[in-house]
Length: 237
Ligand SMILES: Cc1cc2nc3c(=O)[nH]c(=O)nc-3n(C[C@H](O)[C@H](O)[C@H](O)COP(=O)(O)OP(=O)(O)OC[C@H]3O[C@@H](n4cnc5c(N)ncnc54)[C@H](O)[C@@H]3O)c2cc1C
Image (cartoon, helix red, strand yellow):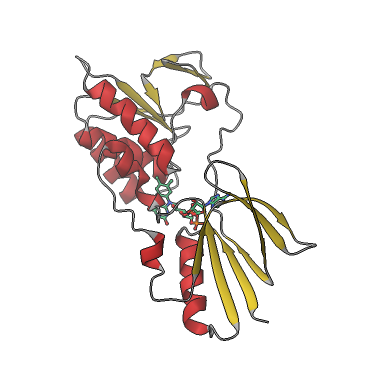
């Protein structure tokens, strides 16, 4: 019987490892199956660009794996049973579609957005960690851009994703007013040179920067800060 390798997730990690294994192992004695929720390869690190309005290539996974012996199963993983060495999968409608047995399992399902327990985030905030979420933000930005006077976008968090998201939106949609919120000094973990470049970029793109600010709650049209101030926001990211 062939050794069954099941790779969960076909993002950067899963797609890369499946391809590498397929090149190194013989299909005569191994069987590689990749399970992914979507039929496309999602370029997650470009989702802020998708949200801002750019078209991002999403190659079909079937094409990515064409010419290899990799089997693709488009389904959502719902459970892993290590005792029985099976994975439960559901189809796109959420109906249970069956089980896949494995001898070796690779878990590469990526990560989820964290709301850090801030009230209102789940209901009102946008994020860019999945394609549906990025498209939801894009839809909101489209509606704000079409409004007379534009609207305000508040990006909370000055990590790399926050910086990329704020600058991308400001550059693509100059009619919107963009504010970037940093808990400490802007870009604190970056080098002095990078921090200075970041400040210049924010200035050039007309991004307002709020430093030493912690957001404690998000409402539909504003974010409430620890110092008692409220920042108006038609979209909080
Ligand atoms: C906006 C943004 C910008 C970024 N920029 C950079 C950058 O410039 N440089 C950098 O190094 N990193 C960047 N990152 C981080 C980078 O995207 C992640 O580190 C990387 O995607 C992790 O790869 P992964 O394969 O572990 O997960 P992912 O790429 O998220 O892949 C996980 C896969 O699993 C699938 N999946 C999830 N759950 C299930 C399930 N239950 N059933 C079936 N399939 C499932 C998903 O559909 C996806 O295809 C950025 C992230 C974001 C959000």
